[in-house]
Length: 200
Image (cartoon, rainbow, N blue to C red):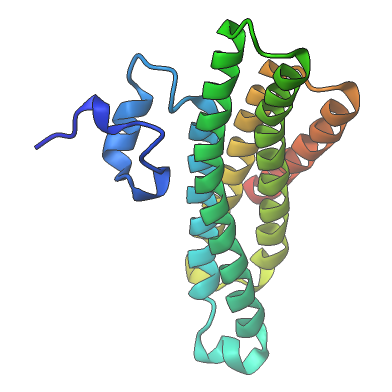
C-alpha cells in the first residue's frame, strides 16, 4: 500500500525512509521536508556516487599502482559524508520547525530566538562547506579514477555542486552576516570551477 502523509514526520529519520515516499512528501503542501532537506539529500546522493567510483578503482592494476588504497580511503570518507548529509536533512527539518515555533512564541526571550535563528543558519552553512570539501576531493581523485566509471565521479561533482548552491539559497533565507556570505560565495565559485573542469 502507498504510505500516507502522516508517515512523514520528524519522528521518522530521513535515513529510514524510502526515496519514493520521501520525494512524495517533499512535493506535498507541508513545510517539511523542504528545500534545505532536498539539498542535503542531493548532496548525499552525490557523495555516494563518488564513493562508488572510488570503490571501483580497486582493481588488480590499481592495487599494483598504489591507487587502490587512496581510492578506498576516499570511498569511506564519501560514504561518511553521505551519512552526514542525511543527518543534515533531519537537522534542517528540526531547525525549521523550531524557527516556525519561535515566530509564534511570544514568551520566548530574544536570546532564545537568536539561538534558534543561529541554528537555522548553521545547518545550511555546514552543508555548503561539506559539498565543497567532498567535491574538491572527487575532482582531485578524478585523474586516478577507473576510466570505465569516471562518469559516476563526474555525477558526484555535479550533484555536490548543485547541492551546495541549493543549500546556499537556504543560507540566504536565514540572513547570514557578510563575513559568512563572502566565505560561502568563494566556495560556490570554486564549485563552479569544479564543474567547468569536467565539462571541457
